[in-house]
Image (cartoon, rainbow, N blue to C red; front, side, top):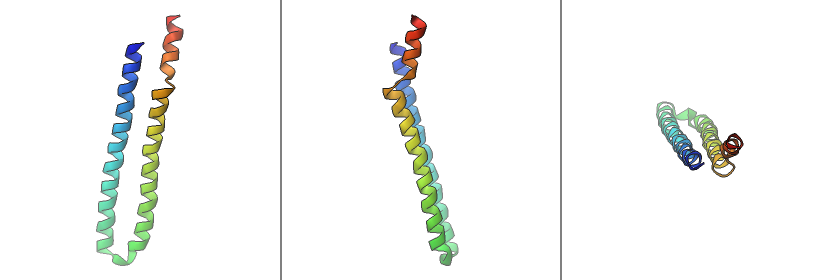
Length: 88
């Protein structure tokens, strides 16, 4: 049972870490492209800003979903119940 809890802790850490890494890279690329587009055509900056904030919100939602799934595995681990059923 200890191996299941340990592997779950590692998977939770990887889930949160890779989710944060992906969101960080995505926001960096998005911010860079926004600045590039606003520098090329300043008259489109308000429209680009609105679209950028919409995409940032969606990126944050992806990270929050990953945190929610990780917390589910951390506190209501379904694998422990399966292990107990298999062990008898």
